[in-house]
Image 1 (cartoon, rainbow, N blue to C red):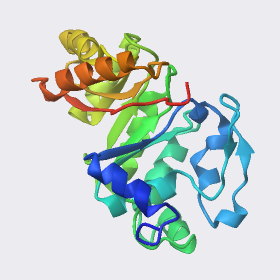
Image 2: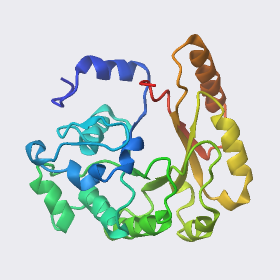
Image 3: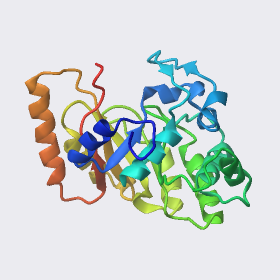
Length: 259
């Protein structure tokens, strides 16, 4: 095991040898209410097991977003958690408090009671996956307000995955998002095939409606396992590593290997 966590040491050593700096827990399963963050907390033997409504994979109750955060923290890398997006803004704010609040707060005390006295070291929250989220700004506002109350204001990042390719964030949300004053702590998640993420980023950044947003490319869904995929992803990685606009904040190495 790696540092007492329920993961194989050899797997973590392989990730470390690749120079992985970020780990994202996410995907289409987060569209299902079974994946509400509150179902993933507490003693593992008391968590409800379930089957998500998209991929029909069993949700192993002993491994959820908070275990992933602890693993990333132990590895010294950045965790990104993707959450079920159809919850109330106040319930998202409770997630921030559960992660970061101390024992004097309602949700921080619950985390301590759940056996985790230290805060969960997560600063990147993705509110849904590949779906329009009309309440995104409202949810972010509630989360940032709670973060400010906890003394960590303007340190968290909020990610919107609005769809595939050039399905931009809703223009009606951009002005409200800019008014929050969070700059590129509000991030659009670009999902593409094996390549093209930097081209999409160029087009996104050229639109002045989004001139305060950051961007990440957190999914590549190539649907192929041949050398062609390897070459196209390698080309896209080279373009990313040499990309000059610092608002493109990260890229996945590869994704959706089951397809």
